[in-house]
Image 1 (tube, rainbow, N blue to C red):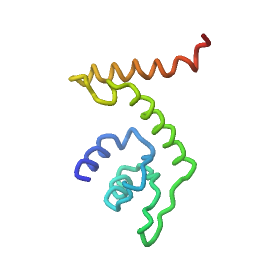
Image 2 (spheres, helix red, strand yellow):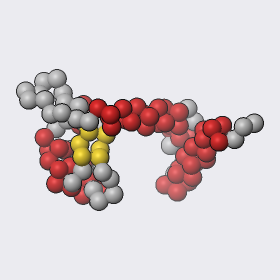
Image 3 (cartoon, helix red, strand yellow):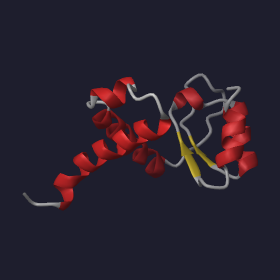
Image 4 (cartoon, rainbow, N blue to C red):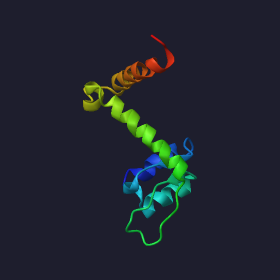
Length: 108
């Protein structure tokens, strides 16, 4: 929670919506998102007295992102973060993404 506010303030002008699971359903997070002008696509926890509606169509896109991370984590080097520098890690994530993407754009 402490790092969420500064992060949203840094990225708030670049994102339109935040797709998150129920673990991010907190009034402080929703207030930070509202202040930054970012749509909160977060389902409410079951113990919230007054449920807050969310865009179910947009929330379905979160599944695609989760599946991408799952496929990237099949690459042991990505999952365990062996690379010491940010640039080399991002480079390997890019290579793994290209390898996953190639079958969809190239018929072998």
